Image (tube, rainbow, N blue to C red; front, side, top):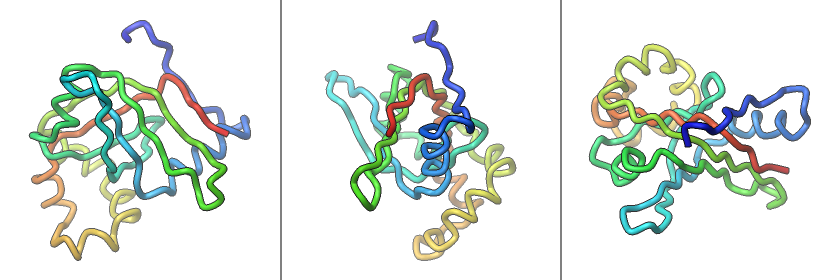
Length: 148
């Protein structure tokens, strides 16, 4: 997918504006990669929309990481919304950054904490322990938006 054109979401486009708002506020996304057998592998993930990309912290041995290393074409899909009439799906390419979470936490930590502050303490996680445990960063750069 090296020749794919990267997608820049345009805030003057109503559909893009709604997609950006959802990407910024939704807490869970579905990350879909292709398994070794060729079947889709979809898992719910915490994520952050950051500088036009989806950033996911992951345990290094997770299946999604192995799949992403093998095939960088992935989907990030949000739920359909309270009225079940919203759709936000990003097709994109994923960059796997092994051991990069500590560096990323310095860049996204404040926003990540604001989004997931209520979720970390019950799991006995801090930003620092999260970066140690979920040390691989998956950075999805969108190439296509499917939304309405």
